[in-house]
Length: 499
Image 1: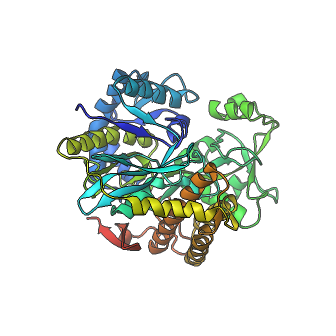
Image 2: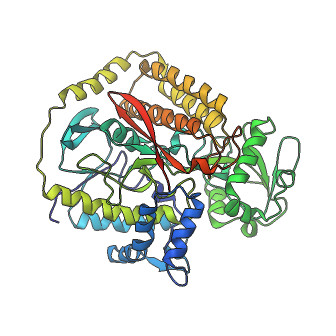
Image 3: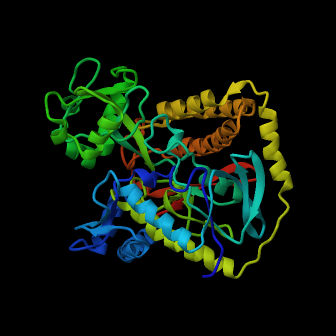
């Protein structure tokens, strides 16, 4: 539309995104798999609390949007229930990112890397830009714009174990909430049961088709919990139940330092493990037949409340991808994550562009906000709390009290811990620009964690990826969605009743 676009990232473009690590599969209505099949499967997977208008957009536009990727240079292959990128899962992420980066450069998109968005510049008329922390220089500056698209990913890093890149810290959700947008479905986090839990190694997904899961007592966990399917089917069809079983074993003290053992015994790894796990064995220098595993936070279904045009409810502010809530409901259907990014990414871009065509740059005075951020840094030069320790305490507490298995007492204890951490973070030590980045992230993580914990406490049932041991059953009375807003610095919540 002839507009100037800046694409900003805390790291080199694409290097810290979840997309880099994806298997490359898109779900869409191709072949005998119809749009109605896709629609119904998505609702069933989301336990019927998805935003149906968003799901309808997803399934209607997915085929054409995916085919359009070929115009951008993506090697897209069509399958029976969707499409996939490249020749295999090990190169799929780069196979999607690299062509899109090259295309964006060719059409004149400006890349602003190693810069963190701290806050939205907003007044009563809408959003007018960003306050940005330039990590290499340590400067805090305003960048004014006519419209903004937030596509910052989810918030899985609030949990101790997550296969998401470390920079995925819920920044978009925190900024949007403070700017007047609403967050919805924040209690729903998808956990993958088999994450690598070897000391000093990243907690990436480490699936196997066939293996025993052993606890400290030497028991076979699959037999103990009466799983009768092959392991490869369990991690696809009974992911939530399996994650709960593993989490309970660890929580009951039957783990090995917060993990269990996956034993492939004398089987050939190339037969009982997918290429992605074999690749990790090679690059991480793993050996033997026994590996430590534990559930890991994989995907967050909650996020910014948007409409079909990706508006976040604040003039000039749009959002797309995992930073949003609504498409997936209580649990995400496999393949819908990448499809969501492409479908709603296109919609968000078009909506933000149309808005910008009828708007003017408005340089709202934000010097006071910039000064407040600078004061945080100045004060933290002589703080008494280590940022990494505070971050660990938050993530460990979220994992223990708001992880795979939750209950009311634990959640109330968690809220007290978050309150205490909010006091401590004001006295955290910043010794470098990288520490400053982690401090700003931690403040966002604390806000998002608080919303997740309260939302989990309010929903007194178990649905999809949200499991309450004190309310273990799904209830028709909870066919509603919980949303949060912020006014004058204070949180409030409400319900969206589904009919």
